Image 1: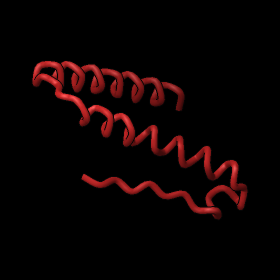
Image 2: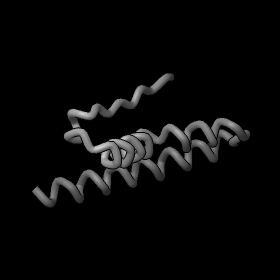
Image 3: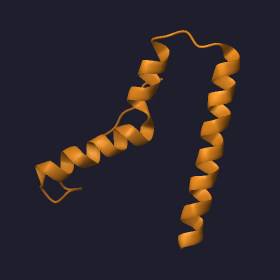
Length: 70
């Protein structure tokens, strides 16, 4: 499952430092590095389910927090 992350100079008004920061932020949000590192070691199916459930719970909490702000 390839994931493409792209940031253009127009997005950051030509500032290369902001471009790098924005790229890193997008990579972290997409969990590209974490998924790669998780794939390097064996994980029991029960451990995968537990981790998936915890991530889902965290995503719901985060979504509720952002909805509460607006």
